Amino acid sequence: MSIINDLKKVLLDVNVSLTELAQALANRLKKPYSMQNLSNKLRNETITHREMLIIADILGYEIKFIRKNGNT
Image (tube, rainbow, N blue to C red; front, side, top):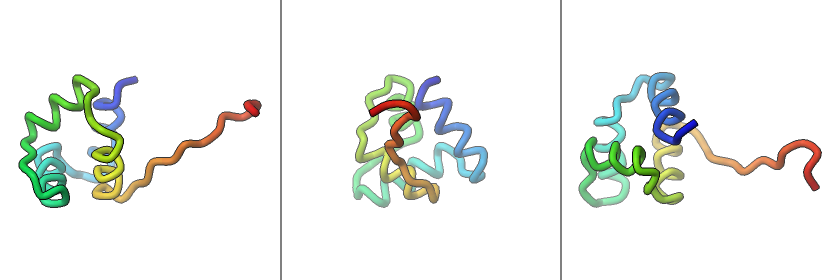
């Protein structure tokens, strides 16, 4: 599954559009973000970890690394 599909599911759950997310991201990072720019980053999988952490925070989520069962 791709990051864009995962994010679109979350956006539907919280009732936020990609345009609204791009605007919130622009406000948080103090730099221009358009819906098209954000969409391209997601589609091309060039979005940074920092951007994803901020997106998660904007949407009321957090990103965690969780060890799989059975791995040491």
